[in-house]
Length: 116
Picture 1: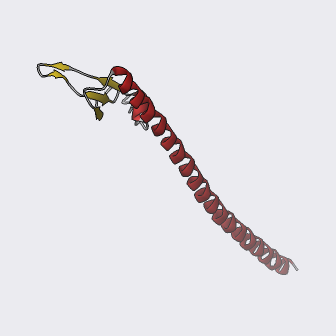
Picture 2: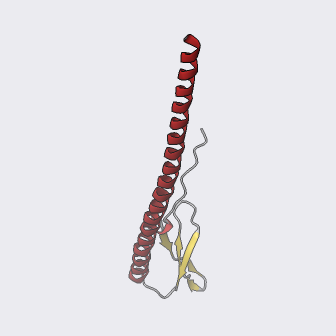
Picture 3: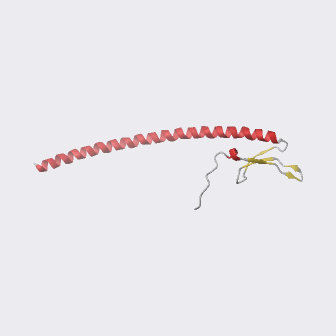
């Protein structure tokens, strides 16, 4: 089976940071996605490890808040949409029920006329 991995919706939540030592000295800090190592952000090389993790914690906090706000908004919009669709379908069902009852009455009266 070819299972597709779900898309990461909040990449900072599982991100990691790296700083490399090069011939020119330390590289800027790189905030990378887990698994893909895709670059999410670059932080100055002069940041200490503690500063980098404070920034990362701050960013994760607001990423999660934004995600939750988006999910709440999306849920409300989906609920509103499906409630409107439900009303439309109930109206169609009611109209079909009435039409079916009229048809049944008409058939009943026609069958009744033929029997007599």
